[in-house]
Every structure is written in C-alpha cells, then in structure tokens.
Image (tube, rainbow, N blue to C red):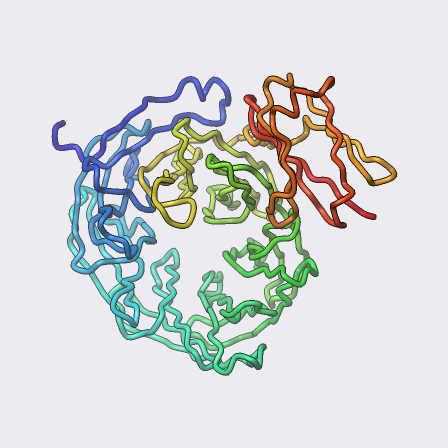
Length: 501
C-alpha cells in the first residue's frame, strides 16, 4: 500500500446519504505529491468496477499541458484497488476524452496544443493500465474531433477564409473522405472570418450532422449540415442564433442526438443569458426543420467565499446518453447540477448536489452510467489560492455516485423564497422582510443586473431595527432589475426586484 498514487481522505458519507437518498456515496482523491494536481477526471467501467483517468500536472507548469496520466481501478464503492501511471511522448492539453475501445482496451484522445498547427492524438491502454499504442495526426490546422460509437474519427478544421474542412479517418488517421464548405461572411467588418465547425452526430443512415457558426462574436446564425457516409452534403439549414430575441443573447449547438423516429434533438447553450433561459433544446425533423424549442435554466446572483458578487448560470457542460435512450446533462450552477431527460427530450428530473465542506469550489466534469443504471459523477476541486481568473487551478478529484431516481427539487440551492419583498406603489422605497433573528444577519447588499454593488447596509445599522423588516430608499435608483443579497449565519440568500419610475 505504500506505493499508492492516490490518498483517499473520507469514507462513504453516511451523513450526506441520510440527508438525501439520491447521493449514494462520495469520495475524494488527492495526488501523492504535494506539487501535483489532478486535471479533468474521466470515468468508465471495467467489469463491475470503475476506471478513473486523471491527467497529472505539476504546479511549475503554467501553460495548461502535461503528459502524465494516472489510471486508477476503483471498487463499486470508490475504494482504490490499484494505480498505474503512463507517460505520453508529447505534452497534451488538459481536456481529453476516455472511451472503451473493446473488451480489453481503453482509449484516450485529445489535442496536442504545441507547436501549432495543433495535433490530434489518441493513446490505447489495456485493462491493467498499461500503455501500448500512441498515434498523432498533424496535417490539419486547429482540429476539432468527434468519435462515433463505431469509432469513426471525424476531424474538422477552422480556417480564416470563410471555409471549414472536414475529414473522416480510422484510428490510425488514414484519411478516407473529406469535405470543404464555403460560408457567406455574416459580418463584413471582419475581412477573413473564422468559422467554428464540429461533427455532432452520426445518423442512423450512417451519415453525419455538422454544426457551424462564425467564431467571432456576435455571431448571428447557426448552421446544420447533413452529409452521407462519404461526406457528400445532403442539406444545409440556417438558424437565427437569437432564439429569445435579446440582442446580446446567442445560442450555439453543443450536442445533437437522433430520436427513434429519425428526427433530432439539439442541445444549445446561451452565451450571454439575460434571464433564466440559459440553455435550450430544439426538436427538428430529419431535414433540419425546427419543430419546437424549449428553454431551460436559471441565472443566480450570489456572493462567493471572498465576498464578491457573481452570477452562476445553469449552462450545459457535459452530456451522457442513458440506457433508456434518454440523456443526462451535467451543469455547474453554483453546485453540481444534473438534469435527466427522456428519449423525447422531456425533462424527468433536475437535481443539485451538496458539495463537501472544504471551502473550495467544485466543477462538474464527467457523468457515466453504470450497469446498475445509477450514475458516477466526477468533479474537480479548484484551488482559490491561485492568483488568476476564478475559479482557480484544478487541485483534487471528487466522485459522487447518485441514484437514477432523483427528485425534481433543488433543496441544496438556497434562494430567496424565504425573503419577502413588499413593493411600495410610490416606488420611493421597498420593504424587505426576512425571517431571521437580527443577530444572525451580517449585512444586506444591493446589486444591479450586471453585478455592481449599489448599496450596503452593515450589521450595526441592522441591529437598530425594531422588527425583521428593512425599508430601502429607491430615490437614487434608475429603472431596471436589482438584487437583494442577505448574508447571515444561516446562509447567503438573494432575490430580484424591479424599479419602474
């Protein structure tokens, strides 16, 4: 046991399980060396056990790359059975994917960022964690990659001349077919715009669906391109990116799935949500005609551990197909959040999960459905001490096992249902009524819709109140949406109000 590369601190969390039967267990994994960090954990299954793959980096590497991977076999309860490291011959970028290639072989793949043009790589290891093959492909600039369930390697390239290039290859990067598409320049102020194009789905007729949009913001349109099996174009559809009409709002395709009837479901994120429509699901027919659009999500203003006002958006980060032909979406919405949809694209349940009391932010990274139909969720713990953009540098790995029958409630996100905002018809003030003892309060802050602090009421002033009610003078406030944020010993709560004069 002395040579284990992972140190587990924590056991099966019976306390959390008692609070919510939906969280079955939770484990935390820490690198053996203090100067090492885990990056972007991926999960798969080996027999009845789990395979976890972490990219390892050391603190001295600041450019987001590394070449060392840790393969960990875990019991069904998250206990470490063994660990093995392997080292690739090239440094690779942080983000990578893990697939089971056959009964005895697993594959990781991703991008080699340096030198440009970017290379694509894949690497194969056996069920004992031993690396036995690496492949690199460097014939395409700025590669994006999609791997189908039957291991077609679909490569797309962005170029700066209104063009995108597409290639089909096998795992050894022997090119089979190719396609070049020319787009009309949406924004004539950009002389040679770049188009961001990705393979999204292999259809039942063995063709492919490709999404594309102009890389530069703001992009006005999304494109869907349907090809046959040898990349001949069958149809192209063009969609307005402003699905809800806001000038700054732009939706883009993240994932596409095909339904049993041949139609498709497109999952789109909103780049700049102005309200609660943070992601959408479009149902379109086999020719790309839009049949329906449904909006989901939430936008929350909260105060982080350093007292800063931030927005948290319920936006999709990862998607996993489920055994019942549905899918789950993984999101970071202050707390790790999962939404389960059926095969028709209807929401079945949505749940946010509590985070461990480590005072460090977590980011959801991967979801894997086990043979018992429950889910393993991998999360990264970030180090806020790092002096850089939030949430900081990845540090450790958490795994959650959650049940497949989570309730449609978000009991672990504290919002302001408990606060009552009483408008005044004269609009010169509002009353904020709260159910807490005055001695529990720290302060009350008011923010505008872009997160700027407008007013602050300190505890010394709150203690002068004679009731659990506070009048806020609005005479200096312009028209718009504002947020009340209360910090107390019982938590941080926020609620919106609107000023119209």
